[in-house]
Structures are given as C-alpha cells and as structure tokens.
Image 1 (cartoon, helix red, strand yellow):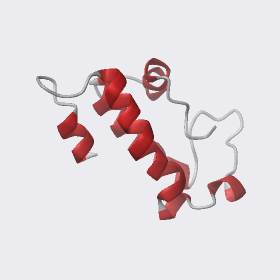
Image 2: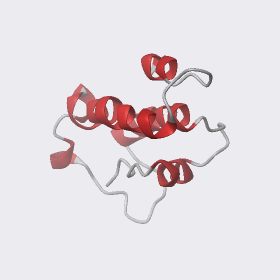
Image 3: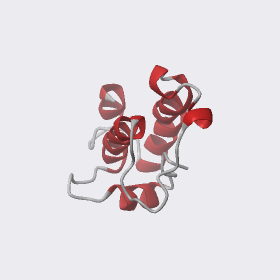
Image 4: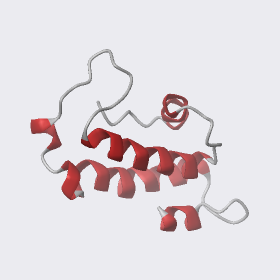
Length: 95
C-alpha cells in the first residue's frame, strides 16, 4: 500500500486510471490469490446473504481494499466503500 501511495502522489504520480490498473494487477491480485489468508477462498467463503457487513476473514480483506481504493481515488475517509467500488469499477471482494 505504501508503494501504491508513493506512485500515486498528487503532484507527479500516476493518473487515476493508471493507478487503478496498478491496484488491480498488484494489490487486488495479492488479496484474491496470493495472500495466505485468502488461499482457497472460493472453496470456504460463505456468502453473507442480505447482510451488508462482511464476516470472518472478509472483514480484514475488506479493510485492505478500502485503504487501496482510497489511495487510488484520493477519497476522504467518510466516503462509503460501495461508492468507491462503483467509481473505480472494482467489484466488491465478496463477489
């Protein structure tokens, strides 16, 4: 996340579309496949149903996605995560 933050600095860094590509190619891929916490998530993941809050390991992964999307978009902390995902065309982790 620190490297992503450094490469997307507001004065000389990557633009939002390029930062989004970097996020999806590096950070999101590590969250989805490479992280020890999410290894085999397709097999053991439980869908939360109608609940809007993620449960279990998805909570920690969601926090990382929140941080990454805020860096990419330059958004405030008060911005909802669903709005960030919509604006950046990044699907939610529970999908």
